[in-house]
Image 1 (cartoon, one colour):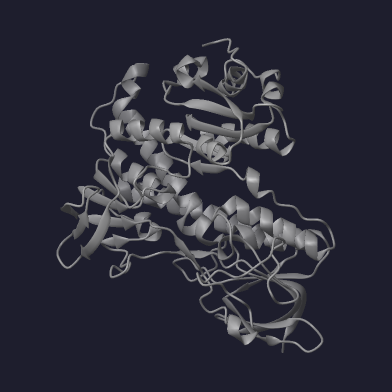
Image 2 (image 1 turned 90 degrees about the horizontal axis):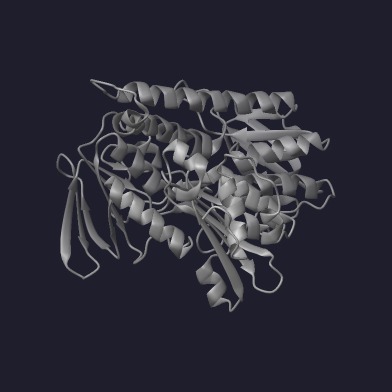
Length: 476
């Protein structure tokens, strides 16, 4: 016998569980279906982000950063250590505990908001006469749900290299990269994006010799050129080896390790022999088991669900959000879309501004930006002013012992409206939020320059960069 709901959400990641909670807050009878499971077979809500993405990677980054500080920087503070070692198993156990806390927290939030949860794989069965859809849940206890409104939030999967499938032993996706049991002597990474840089940083800090191979001719092409240049200098100084413009022809994992054959930027054949290889070359939309053909749900040539600007699919009452649709594959983008869709179902005007979605890379230095880069403004023919302030001149950064990087403001040459803010340096992930708020309210660089910032704080670098747009910094 089927169970009826106003809204059924397929997927319990950031886009899905947030959409379910917001829909419930708006008075709908809501169900959320999710198939992720923990090592005991129980539910593991939170999707890729919580289980094998954002949350566990930050846990490992924090542990490895503590180790690096202890090994290389504690002496500067008068702290002496001897016989320093890293218990990788304990580090991974801590990471797993952090993940479980988030899994359990999301399950609690669904219960708190009276969202019915079904553990299993959700798929379309058929359209229901008179409107709505029948959804099957394949799990320990099979269920059939019926809903007038369906929100698809099934996320994405790691993209594998052709001819080199993930075994999660020697050739690793982000999942396997988070479960390495011991520090490899040599680690290869294909792709210098967020995952590649973060995971490469974790294992480099713990003693691995890390080489990153990137197909693009330049580093972090999506970031501001000045930020990318500063970050690359810092990563090379730390010991990360990076090669650009490579073309991989073969990946051989038949031996004890992995051998990557590639042509370098000059076209000369090279080989890289490593113990483990992390492949981070992007992600593909996850529609596995969704059975879209049962109801005629339209997908594009890349496998993404086709949606309009409001996240409506080609089917009445069916919506899709997050990694499974167009736009950046970011957890916070999925959350915003989930909220907006729930509000649109309720007849409200849900809103997502794609132009002010922040990007963050949680390396050291951290990298964060919002809005347009200098190269984009030049390509668009926009007249702009730039202001930049180095953390080297910031008192709090000096006290922290981390003065790498800077804050850069880009503002319209005539109106002074902020067009982009780019940060490389300590706590960039937190500092960028001020810029997002400012841009959401169409603030000018002068607005930020005239706001009082606490002293001493890293945020003063933001104020000073805004002052620099008008060439009137006070501390540099």
